[in-house]
Image (cartoon, rainbow, N blue to C red):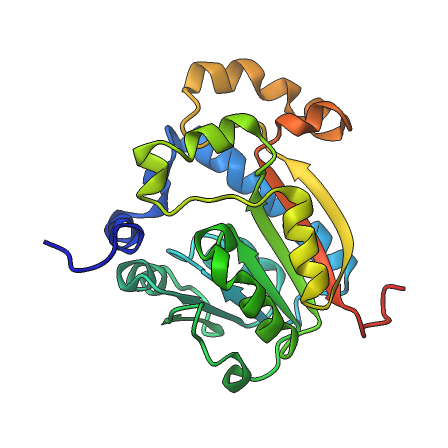
Length: 246
């Protein structure tokens, strides 16, 4: 029997088989990664990150994004995650010599010892380490001026209800309300450059429903009222002292 606490044990187990198993189907998984990934690249490019940029991947999981999207669009990637099994899986998929993965607890990393980065990416990690998020953000702000963040939309009523279920509790899910997270960003010294809501499909969406509703997703994302139905918040931020985007 695992001696780890429930959320850590869950992520250690899922790391052995891959995070694709968190989705109801390959189509839903690809849509989530393609939709969010494309926007991450666009938003990163808009604040000056490019193929020469050294990127810190905070909570990299099994390396799905770092080994594909990030490595194709940016320079060196350094990923950290608590799950040893996920890191092992990430390392097994590396195709470029400047993509590296290390086991590390993002809540207690010595960020200053990592050196400078051109940017940092945080894909769905902060709501798993909610109490530590303000300190992590402050630490990261000292080693990079630019950051891309994806978090579940904590304003989504269905999302908050699901987080009360045993399945979500064992994953350590506790999403931020949008303004709540933006307040944390501001207190940590960040200026929000762009914000988007994306993706209308929870991981568990049945394939027939996904195929039926997929054509409507772009319309929902662009509508200022309907995008409350989106499952994801995305931000690009810079430190307050960075004048490049003023």
